[in-house]
Length: 179
Image (cartoon, rainbow, N blue to C red; front, side, top):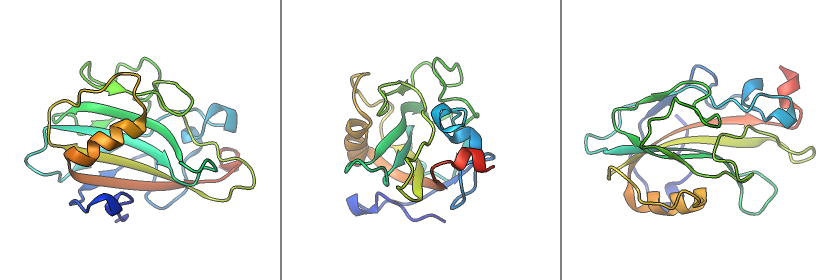
């Protein structure tokens, strides 16, 4: 099981996150790369289980800590998923996707789009880690401005996360065309 990349902010129990589109510790599939990198900007299928009984909602994030920015790169941030939602189909992060329930929100990513943006590591920056994290949240809703950044979501999650599930895939420049 992948270690919790957010453990430095306080250890919480981990639960299980799986995907039919990627394998923990292995390269992303071509579809999960950005269109500009030869991919499809397609968010992967995600399924989770084993979260604590007190969970009231979920948040899902995808983050690249290896982006050459000094602050990483947020690819996707979804909050207020009802506790009844324990999987997302491939493409749920697409612009205007009907796969997310109406009470859920998608915050703007680093490219200012309220959707999933696929991997696109620049040449010469090595292997990047893409951390897909499902956060089990202790409140039904997080009251955030819909234009908040994923970092603001992360700040709020720091105080409301009961447990996390992590799946980490990798990507490199040109990785979409190497498949």
